Amino acid sequence: MTDFRQTAHAPRIESVDQLVERMHAAGKPRDKWRVGTEYEKPAVERATGRAVPFSGPRGIETVLRMLAERFGWSPTEESGRVIALERGGASITLEPGAQLELSGEQCATVHCARRELATHVREIVSVGDELGIAFLGLGIQPISRVDEIEWVPKPRYQVMGPYMTRVGTMGQRMMKQTATVQVNLDYSDERDAMRKFRVGMAIAPLLNAMFANSPITDGKLNGYMSYRGHIWTDTDAARCGLLPFAFRDDAGFVDYVRWALDVPMYFILRGGRYQTSVTGVPFRRFLEHGADGERATIDDWSLHLTTLFPEVRLKGYIELRSTDSQAPERMLALPALAKGIFYMPHCLDAAFDMIRRWTYEDTAALYREVHRQALRARFRGIEVLEYARELEAIAEEGLQRQHALDDAGNDERVYLERMREELAAGRSPARDLAAKWEGEWGRRPERLVEATAYRADAS
Image (cartoon, rainbow, N blue to C red):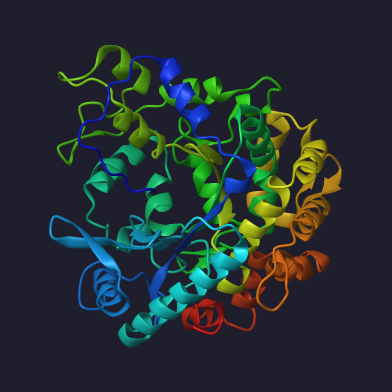
C-alpha cells in the first residue's frame, strides 16, 4: 500500500481529459525503461511463528530504528512513531500488520535488483537475529489470527480498516496478514501500455499459480495454494480483481480513468491530515461537486490511484500485483519473468498470441480456480502448468535476447532457474509447503519458520 506525500500547492483538476493526458505524458522511450520491484514479507517471532507487533522493544518499530542507526536509512515519523525509512532511491515501508516492504530503486537490469535485495536481506536479518525476529518467504502470516495482529499506527489505516468491513469479509485479512512481490514496468505510449495491460490481466491467474505460496494460515492448512489470492476476491469488488474493459481490443487510458473515477474514495489529504468527508464517495462525484468546500486536485487523484487494487494497476507505469511473496532465492523470478516478456516486442506479441482469445469471463473463472489448485487447475482442457511453461519459455527467450550480463557473465535467465526446475517437476512452492507441514514438519510452527526464514546467505 503505497505511501503518498502531498505537494504544497497541487493544481485543481479541470477536466477528465487532463487525467488521461497525464497517462500519455508518463510514456518513456525504450532506452529509459526500468524495472521496479516491491518485496513484502511477514515478520514473526522466531520461536513461535507468531506475528511480531509494531510496538515494543522487540517490535517492528525497533527494527526500523536499528536499521536507521546502523545502515544509513533516514526515518520517517507520523505522530512521533517511525513508520518508514528512505535511502537513495529505495524505501522501507510497512503494511498494516507490520509486514516489512522494500520498494526498490528503478533498475535497468535484474542484476541491479539482486544487489539491492541481497543488501536488504543482510541488513534485516542481522537486526532480526538480535531481536529473535524472522522474516519469512511466504505470501501470508502463517500462525497469528487477524485479531492477534497489531495495527501499524498510520492514520490512513484507521480509515481503511473499518471501511473494509463494510465492503467485504476479508479486507482486514488482506491488510494485516498478506504479503506480495510486485513488479513495476514502463511503457512507451498508449498502444504499448494497453497491450501490456491486457497481457498482464490475462496472465494474472498464471502468475498466481506459478508463485502460489500461502497454503497455511491461522496455524493450519487453509485449503488453498494461494490463500492470499483468494482473499482479494472478497476484499472490495469495486477496486480489486480483474477489469473487464482490459480484454477489449479498443481499450485505452480513458477506460482506466473512467473506472477509477467511479471507485469510492477513502480520504483526501489536507495540511498533512486525512479528511474523511469523501469516504465512500466516487471520485467522479467529488470532482464534479466537491465536498465540504474542497475541490479535487491532482494530488487527490494521485492519492486515489494508490488506493485501487486491481491485479494490474496503472499509475504512470504498469504494476503487476498477482503474486505471493517468495523465498529470497525465488523473489527475483517475477521481475525477470516480466522483463523478459514485456520488454521485448516479439515476446510481448507471443504472450498476447497465447491469450488473445481469452475472454474476461474465462479468465475470471480461472483466476478463482488457481487460488485452490495453482498449476493443477485446468483451462480450456489444458492444465495451467502447460501455459506456465510456455510463459516461462517466452521470458527466457526475451532475457536471452536482451543479453544483460552480470560480473560472472550470466544473463538474467539465471533468476528463472529455480522456477524452471519447479515447472519441469510440475510443482508450485505452496504444494511443497503443504506436504511438509502435514508430513515431516508435524504441523510445528518452529519447523515452518526454520524452513522459510530469510537468511543472510540466501539472496
